[in-house]
Length: 466
Ligand SMILES: Cc1ncc(COP(=O)(O)O)c(C=O)c1O
Image 1: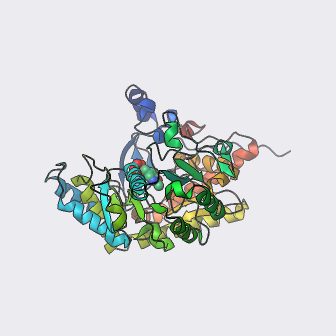
Image 2: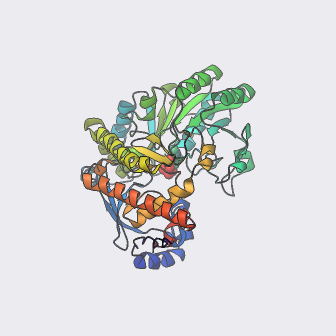
Image 3: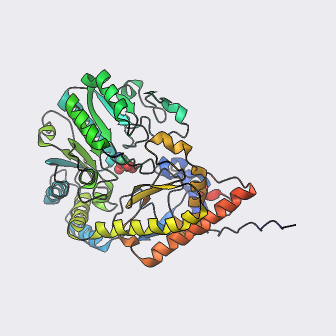
């Protein structure tokens, strides 16, 4: 009789300092963190530092970072080119509530790189950028409703937190008549009623919405790639058809390029897909991790500012953010950083294929090599609801295993892997692939033995992760 194989030993991470920090933080910060998305219970990670493509936690565990702060750190942590420039500029003072040349240069670069933005203004976060873009669209059209796609995340203001990311797809309502599902309490019903949820990649359904409500709809806001749903891509022609539909109904098209901007191409997703939106929102990659963000668009629309629409912010265009945007955007414009990032993403994907293909499980990559997901399902996903039919338990188990083995993707399959320029190093790529391969093998062995898969939150408290 064959003997049962011994349980694979998962490497243990040191957690003493982080456990102590967690207990301490719980006394002062709800969930022990400054964001719900970082609150992973007893597995909450407390960071010490990052450099290049790596990050070290407070216990000194070292990881290849595949989260990169949810995308902003496009060059690498602590990039000397950006940090030195920011340091030099910030010595002249940070906040004046006056306008510096750094801000003018930053917005000139946004115009230069996108090619379609005529005017733009800085904000501190992507949340503010989408909030202001929506307001300007309402003001410009004199209409109140905004269409947004299920599974898309546009930040944490009330108008954005509708039909974002439930685990249970039935909460989104009937597939033919989706409901405006508020994420969490405290969002006024009257606000939720101004948002019309739609299903990504379904142009016929979009037309029906426009035919029914077109006169009330100010704009449609879209993450050109579903960055918050494993980077699901548009089907061939979807953006072009959506652009045509918006023009037919006099509805503005807002590209939320917070994740895709200056990443998919120098001109972001608009350049990548060959679309000219009316408004765009930018953040993340434009500041390599510094809190730089912006919204901008056609002159005619942006001309609603400053007289007809409110926009302001004590920290809007602060020196640190503006200087970071100037240097980061200059690097992205003038060097081959993006080509390096795209090539690195492709190399990692090739390596993953070599690991996955012989195993014979159904999978496909979603997204762009610079931000991609791995979906365990045969058919290519086209919308958020498809995520529910993927083997995301397997993904979660692999991601958690990778943490234990020194590579850190988000332990939730909905978040893509983010590639930065500093990942272009054979050791880093090797480490990612080895961690993936070992974690896949362990997850499949556990499954065969009937060991329950660990869940995404509380991920690191799973057996073996320490
Ligand atoms: C597409 C998109 N829009 C908006 C936001 C909100 O940006 P921020 O977190 O800077 O408020 C995010 C954040 O992840 C995002 O991915």
